[in-house]
Every structure is written in structure tokens, then in C-alpha cells.
Length: 353
Image (cartoon, rainbow, N blue to C red; front, side):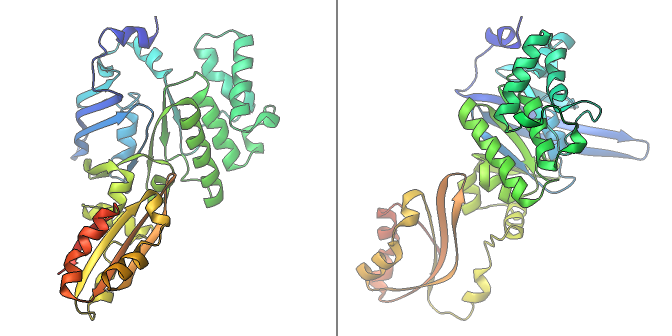
């Protein structure tokens, strides 16, 4: 009996929600202290999304992702997957579930004495597939990750990026519906990181596999994620669509992480100190990013718009931009500015009247 069969009768959850963490606490006890790694975490991950969890070292993100396959068990709280609390599974049921949740590790965790092919065959052998089935599936996923010519090599003969591709192939071997990535790119150089992120994005698109990844880098979140949760001191302090969190960060930790990645939400303040008049922040996304909106609005309202700070880029595949503008002109034109931007689908926030 498969895990999917086991939970079919209990599948009654919000549409598309694959994972629901409910009031998760994790406490570690030692002779001289009590450490609260997670403190009341609630989280929902929709099927087919790439969900990023970001935080600094010690924030609890590694503990959190390991809750999703019960490599760490919560001290209290529930881990719902497909509408069933997996903390209640028996050992045989848990083994079946883990075959549906592949994991990719920061330091690859490959078997150094086995070839690339045998590393990928390993979970298939544990799952009880025949030798012929193991060989066929292992070669299939190694082709998928771009390593068909390396199957007889050993991990020490591969680059870091190639080793991580083997790790991804191994995690995909059993055809999981969930892929967990524990700092999967933090040991790699920037160029290799981008190639691994492209591979994860392609896997998500091609096979509709839900991916949950943890990272300390906002650049990783920006490159591949649909949703993001920011964790600090064992608590989720902010979460939402990546575009919304990037353009309108609410928590100081989020703002700090964005600033460290080169997106300084408050850098305009020093520049604006000596500039009189109204200041606004406009946020746009999608095709409007590529249009000459500022020049059009400036001509229509006869206003001078000076850019004090700005960024334009892409979040996953979506263009976005955010600008802080100083506005000079007639009061009646200034009063119409928010309406005109809103008409074009641009969000406008007054920073200083």
C-alpha cells in the first residue's frame, strides 16, 4: 500500500495545500540550558510551488525543513502532508512517505566508495526495485541532471556542482512529489549556484514537483522561489509571495537581508534629506516594468520626477521594479499623481507629503 493510498481517505484540505505546519515547537534540552529552535511555527506550502525559507545562521531554518520528512520530530505541533499528520505514521508508513520526499543536502552526502550510478541506485535498492529497474531509473535521472557520461566515476572525480547534480538525481530517483533542499547551493561558487538553481526551476516546471528550500541568500530566493518565509529566532516573522516581500518588506530582519543582497529599502533617506517637496515610492511588476511610464506621467501632469533610488530586475521569471521619486510641480498635478499611476497598474506610496 502506498502512502498516497493511506492518506486518500483523509484528504480534505484547502485546495492545492500540500504541507501545513501547525504550531510547531522544537526544544533541545541540555544540562545547563533549554534551547527553543522553533517556537510556534505555522506554514502552508501549496502543491507545485517553490517555497523558500530564509534566515540567518541559528534562526531555525534547518530544523524546520527537517520537520518535513521527520529527520527532526517536533516537541509539539503537527506536520500535515496531504491532510494527514505524518508525526502519527508508523515506521513502515514513514518509510513509504519518505520515498515521496527527496532531500538534497548542503555537502552532497554522497557515498564516496560508490560510483555515481551506484549512488543514485541506492534509494531504489532500498525501495525494493529489481536490478533492471534500478539501472533504468538511475540512468534516466542522471540524464535529466546532465551527467550521463559520468555514471562510472566516483564522487572525488567530480566538481562540486557535478556532485550536487548527483545528489539531486538521487533525491529524484523514487519519483518524489516533494523535494527538500537544505542549503543546496551554499557550498558552490556563484556560477555553479546559478546552474543548480536553473536545474531546480526546470525540475519544478517539467514535473510539477513541489520544492522547499532553505537559504541565507535573498538572491537564491529571487532566482527561483514563488513564496518565501523569513525565520528569526525560531519564529516566522514574515511570509508571502516573493514579489510582495521584496517590494514591501515589513520586518527589520527582512529589510536587513534585502539590504545585504544589494536591495536597500531605506537608502533613499540620506539622499532625500536636502530635497524639498513630496517623495513617493512606485512599485511595478510584469510588462509595465518595460514601459516608459515615468516620462509619460511627467508629460501628462507637467511634473518633474527625479529618481532618488531604484532597482529593476527579475524575480523568478517576472520583471519588477521599485523607484523612490522626488516630485516637483503644481499642487493640483501632484494631487492627481497617485490616480494616474494607479490607472496604469502602478502601486504608489507617499513617503513624504
